[in-house]
Length: 499
Image 1: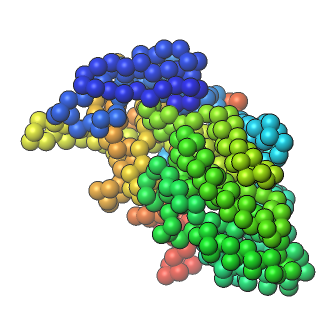
Image 2: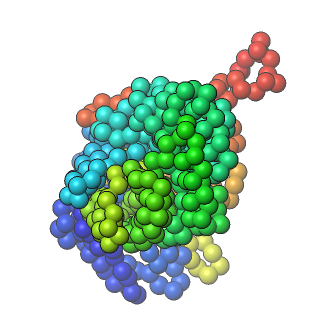
Image 3: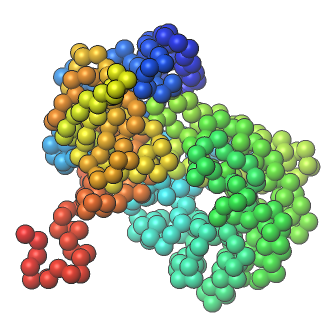
């Protein structure tokens, strides 16, 4: 949780206190883990399975007297009735407030050390024209990594000079399009890209600003597939290769070397990894200054959010202050000026703004020979709208959003409708024992990567995305229909249509 709360540690059968949003003591859980429980050690058994954990849900989420959960001032039941389920509900005010917080916190921290910052929203987390407008309204730039993401940002009216282009395999056509529209920065990921970008810039009569992505060797404390500073992986260059790359860039009149870029992973809590990575990258930055001053240092993103009540992400203000201070101290130790800094949060801006609504279809109490049991709750979505649990074991939370229950919580697993045993939406959760078909189930913290990774597995249409704010709602990404799916099948006669 945010706001200075502490993690809850459990030994045996004890109760624990966790801090609420206002930092007051809140008796959140009674922990009854024993050796014969299927529950993981970290999972807290709530005294009230209706309660919404602070920091996991949008700030606007509330449980109303009639039992319905409201988001942005609108009842989940009303949203489900209007738009159907599954449905991703995105709190616009949450996105905007977190974008402002990142912009202002890093700007204030930079001003303390007489430098400047740019904050780029990492569009891969979830990009639509509405989101692009929200974050740029609040002062952020946009980071894209494909032609598709670039076109979405441009369609939203984003100034190309405020866009950075990432990616380990940018095609020639993607590079030419980016250069032609006047993109602000291209992040070079390999030696091959140097020549491609230089040729495109020369043809366009431009001098293109570029950064060089390096691997600092700092491994984030996260899932292996999310740790992107390992030397043995597809992104970036070693320090030795980066020095040669910078030398080549400086030889080419169509390119301007603006600085280094490094990204150490995703869903990171604390600042230790960022500190160490910054220190190592500054060593290379200092050596490269022999060939000319360097304007910028981009330290990437990867800032974590709370998916469960035991997650403890670092507050934005603390992140900004400590990371910028670490860079300032590193520069002072080397006797060099502090470059302009850049950061790329994505999940930390949009993640907690999203809540996915599902309708419960079936329930099944699975009892093992050992006597242990788990309630399986099947919903009308699954890995097609949230692939993260199947991809890398991501954990989520869930609550009934249509009513309150007085039943005791039972260990549950929320699963989808797809023909895969790994189709899990929420692996471990305590839900009221009377959860039943027709209940509306809400899964918070689904704003990041769920839409981006969505698919049509089993020919399931992707759900709509609805933005809410101050009691109003509107569709910002249209949901798919069966007709949409059939329209792409070239084997269907245009005269037959969908029956």
